[in-house]
Image 1 (cartoon, rainbow, N blue to C red):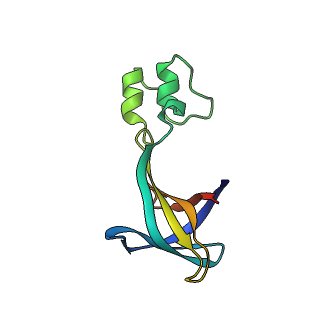
Image 2: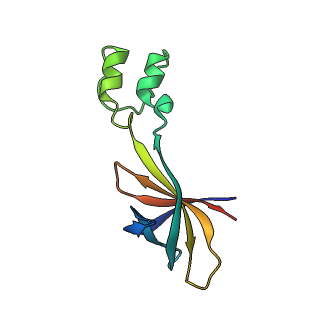
Length: 122
């Protein structure tokens, strides 16, 4: 398995009867998705955010903006990325009809709409 964290462009369509990433452009090359192996949703790293640190009794950093929260629970409610989610698709894809397909992990950030290629399993 090779790990990447590179931006990609994704086009949607029907794959095996479901709406899914149908094609993606990675490193100036078009990859065709032939099958979806699985799909899951990951939450953000909420335990690393300022609200979680405050709940553990750790002080905010000097560069934090805004006034400190009155209680840790207020800080939790104000944390914008607390529920940041990524939808991850593990797909079978190839750069052309005659090429050997491989397994690729594509991640979609719900908040920004950005797609990234995370892993290639060979």
